[in-house]
Length: 263
Ligand SMILES: Nc1ncnc2c1ncn2[C@@H]1O[C@H](COP(=O)(O)OP(=O)(O)OP(=O)(O)O)[C@@H](O)[C@H]1O
Image (cartoon, rainbow, N blue to C red; front, side, top):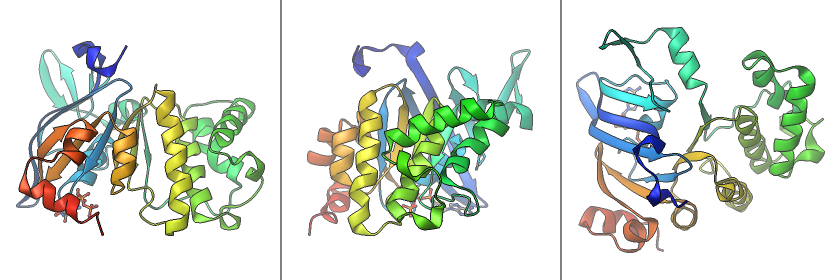
């Protein structure tokens, strides 16, 4: 079934009328996004347009000022009690957030732990898996990112690209329903970018995991995304298929933004 055929019940992430302000500064306004199960969404746009804030709210790292976010049919920041929306408690937030994984620009591996332990800490302590189960999952995911021969090494013995691939494997071990990528190649030397994008392409091609990716790699977005959102000053200024948005931009703002990527 293609993503277009899916009905409303296949929506896994739903942002409704989101406003986000930091003090007096409104950085997102009237944001509405529906992400369908298995869909790959690329968020593009100039620095400061609000891309990171969108995914940080889903990771519960920022709280929306107004509006609601649903994950797999459940409110994230609210609890519905007798038809009323109340702020969610920490326990509720933690449980719903358990559906979400995030890979950051800085991979933040634990330097004093082997690659294997970096990948098994959370499944053991958060999911309650046995050491054996966690290691089996970690091995499978490290194989997926092409690093099964590095399991006994420490992060400092790996290149930046390899460390970022470990960070991706570490997220996959948690089997998130939604995986968020925040400019995961931005901190890498140019020659290491390709291997990380390749790994993400492979995971995307498997189809099941819903992904939201912030990227400045337009060719990658064109390849991987089902839909692209162009953020401009806290609003979605254009959206559509990668071909519509990246190859046939409508607004001057998007044309000028994309122009920066052609030298
Ligand atoms: N904790 C914060 N306190 C105050 N302002 C913030 C905070 N976090 C983000 N902002 C502001 O919100 C706006 C949107 O930031 P955001 O990081 O979401 O943009 P972005 O599109 O991801 O940018 P970039 O591509 O540079 O990462 C910016 O103007 C930023 O300065």
